[in-house]
Image (tube, helix red, strand yellow):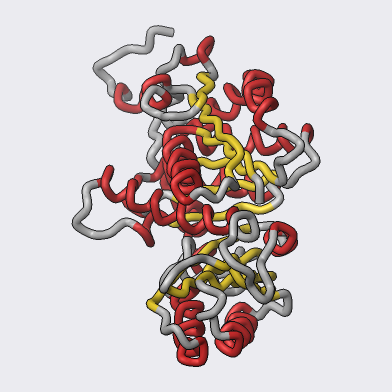
Length: 359
């Protein structure tokens, strides 16, 4: 899938950079171009991408301070500037646009839904979102921001691929190191989805192509991506279990949104040397995925690569019924309730008989 990336906010800019670099390093050529947008100049400076600083008249390049309503207002006011910068990048070759954002901060959670809406008005190609959910320890404001942003993104985007920070942050890592590892993991998963059918090595029996990715995401709503790999024997008959185990691992332990296995549609691509891929294993894995997701729309195919390993790449669409999503939404709803309770009247501190009212 030939795609153009648009990173919004700090987390969105970093993940967009990771995606573009993964694609360039692998030589897939699926990422046509990328742009990063932010209200904070300091977050744009280190990015090796073309950037657009928005909201200068409102926040003077200092960011919106986690206020996603202000982030939405600023992006709405400066959307034309962003679209003008993006227009030369969305050539006739582009098959999709991906808006990438962290959903907890102010600029990403507020600005991403605005840009998705505007892009859908201008372009005929699908406009997808990649959203990063904040961890439980990231504070009430981030949970509230993410809940509101996700609700809007799902409505505006053709599909929203989710990454759960809690599931991917390894214990013992620094915050910065943890986020870099998360970005690398997500870049591999989404990068391989984009590359499917674009730059394959060898001839597979049934190669996954762009139309199958788009048709899977046509289920809309929320989506998740999974990945797993294992060493493969030279004889494909010895790799039946290898292929099925890789697909199971990609779903059970390698999803960007863990436990989100109830899906409306699914796609599984088995990557590796076509001479090592077991057809029996691939078909068994596809049937298992159909049973696990409860979906009758399970597509499957090959991703030919020159490798001594077999990898499973899984895309699940329409996963909003999953317990993981419901748990996050309940956390966001509770955060809204807590936020209301935590806002006392500042004047209440002065309610005593020793001070007279001015008016």
